[in-house]
Image 1: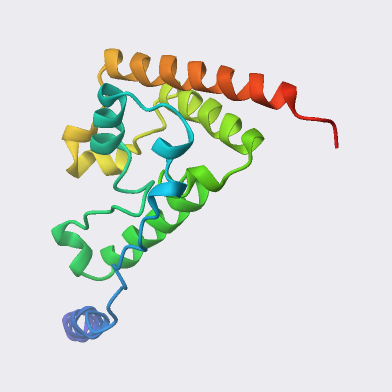
Image 2 (image 1 turned 45 degrees about the horizontal axis):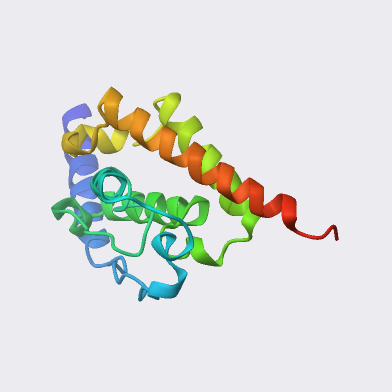
Length: 162
């Protein structure tokens, strides 16, 4: 009896996995407007850009390169949700559209997330070990983010009160 139930359950699970493969996730990246990017809004030195591109841009920009497992459900849904959430939190492709205060706050969060080892996500690093930040790279990004935040804070201080 138990074997029969397990066999039926296995067939149902396999059938469900096959069926969900037909529900494809849209993996189209939105177009990038160069006038709205982070590079258009603040100074991003080449060494910083290199680290951001390798460790952050797949989720935090409109330049996502979807890996092989993005074609398999349910991992594609999980991945798409992570990318959508990441882009809402910080998007290098639309950073130039943020207010000065939001830009400054996002740069502050960049350093906080790196210092707490919350970014890149540990789950991302399981498969993308090359995205891991060395201590020197983490310091480079934090120093850069703090310097750019200071420039933005100076601009904010010059804004007339609302």
